[in-house]
Length: 158
Image 1: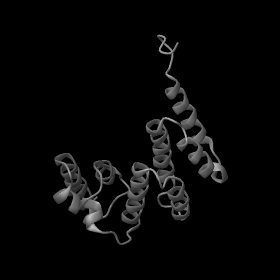
Image 2: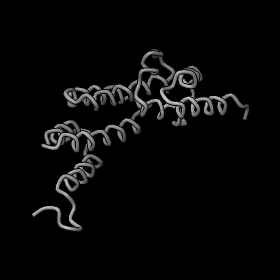
Image 3: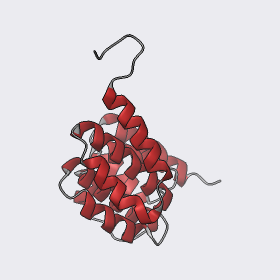
Image 4: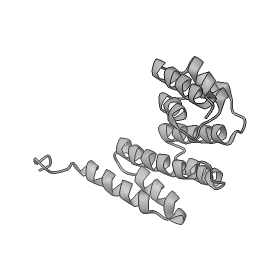
């Protein structure tokens, strides 16, 4: 019988095991492990575990030259998962902004709340054009205010 008091549901235990395994996986085995996690019968839980992994790895690799090849590999593995595909795409957009490479205003204003919040709170983002755009056209008042504050911080002389 499941649901005993103090007993974790099976999907919580699998989630914890997946997160731990993804934190420890070697680069060579990463794609296979991500694919295996995505085959779990609980798609929502699997997406959550892999999403957490993508966020962690993208943060680690954001300014690294290996980001592009890693993202291309992950894109193939997660291609059938819309949420994960969008999240990975948005990490790529954040990378463009952080590295000072060309990006499209429509992509930034059309991005998810998560992405816009991440952009305005990440201390690594110093692009005044991106922050100005979010200060004017961010999806929520909170994002617009945070972008305005961040922009003012950057414009103040040290």
